[in-house]
Length: 403
Image (cartoon, rainbow, N blue to C red; front, side, top):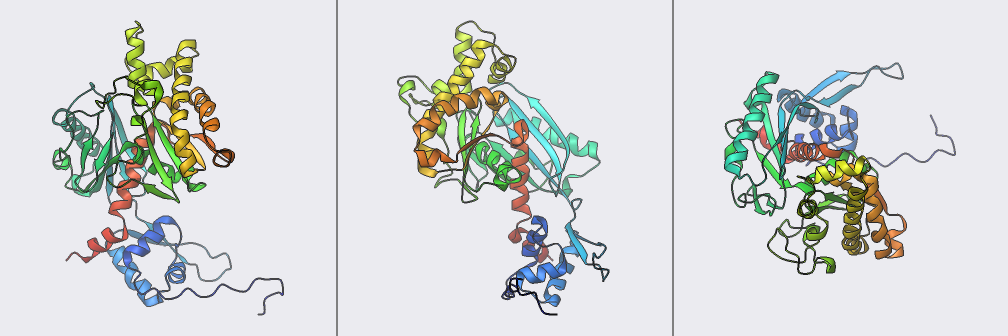
């Protein structure tokens, strides 16, 4: 049958990709880019025999389910391929200065159980990590699941992280954690790979199912006890040479000249805009405030002084952030962390100084947006990072190669 004259010519066939592995096929299925055998063949250029062989190994490993959908044309229905969400579990741990969150999730990221634990500020890993392990073990037991079903654990920490070693290397917020291996604390819960990253990077990863669907260039601002950035450029997370990219809170600003920072230096942005500094200032003036969450809660209910403090914090952050926006030209600044609980107030202050401080071109299309997952962003990002690791083509192919 000939095509109408106005129809575009059919696309050229995809060149063969003999290197496409079973792991590559699972990645295509997970992402939804190819969900039938025919689509896998068209996307990869593999023959039907090669696609079938790779799928056979994925099905045998319990990673892929194959069902049937009715054909819209009345012909033979195409088999639909999906990741088997019940083929294992992943655990997520978001460690904060005064609160830690933990969850158990299926392989498609669906949360099966979660818990939040408030802790004393300044606890070391020898005290806190056994508590974390206990919560994870109890959630698994309550679900009737075993540790050997866990395929990976994702964890976020404040400050710079050495991902290869799975340790914190520079965290003013977590005293006593630097250089301490964390995997051994969790080994009795599950002997699974541990993926550790900075809390701002994890928050940025959570936006893959949020603002990053529409925008490839985004700065994800965590404004909480501390201040930091997750930087996404061209759709890729930017960590920097030593994983220290995004330490906005320790940029030197004139307003903080001479003021001590918790990092041991003076003049840092955090000393005038970080949640810990605001709380200290309020407590010194006799206010009953224990955490930045208390300040935000007061701002939300309309307390005038609290609103003014939150907005002023936004202004200070906007001043420091303007240079980064000018250099990187993001499409959006996404605000998360505790300050995002009073988003309108904080963002108003941020806009006051951010837009006048950047170039007209960098600010022309710039948006300031709330984080998609709010206070759950840490857990969502941890799950995303660990799934990307344990279900990566490399990891899946290594699993299938085991005798």
